[in-house]
Amino acid sequence: MRDIEERIEQVELSMMFLATFSRSYYSFYAIWEHLDSLDKDAGYLFPFKSICNALLGDTALSWCKVFGSNAEGTHWKSAAMVQDDFRKQLFQELRVTDVEFTAYWKEMKHFRDEVIAHFNVNSFGCNYVPSFDLAMNSAAVAHKLLRVQFPKNVNYTGPLCLHDYGKQVANKIIERLLL
Image 1: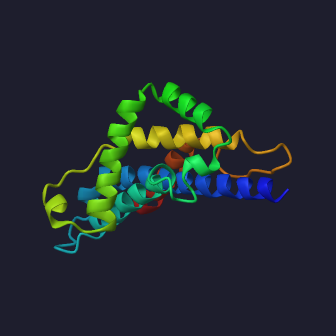
Image 2 (image 1 turned 45 degrees about the vertical axis):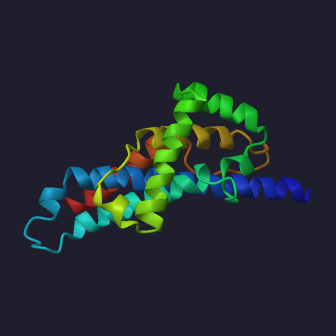
């Protein structure tokens, strides 16, 4: 019985970080679209650019908590019931190969490791930021695949679609900021 409870907890934690990723991803782009007007007249302070940088960092960290290192307790491999099925469905829905996803994973992990988590001046100076589109899509697919693993008696109350959820969060931010 404890194994089932632990598995449910692992799935919930992984899904929580995927939802956090979605919020940060969509919030970043919502603020970024209005960055010039939001930071207008702020001089050298750039408050909303700072918020965007923090959101970008949180986005990379949250994605890597589920897709980064196998040692993470919230890695999808710890949460997925059948790893091979999960991986196959993930790649099918994303329309990527294992090789393509691994190359992307290396980019994201390098960005997280060298720019966000540990400041490497050489990596920071190149101003390279990977595209987060595949990360967003993989988060949405993983969230969906993990959600269907819940036993019927689990009352899941979180988001059903991470794209819709992130967009709702972003809309609420812009609605409040641009009153």
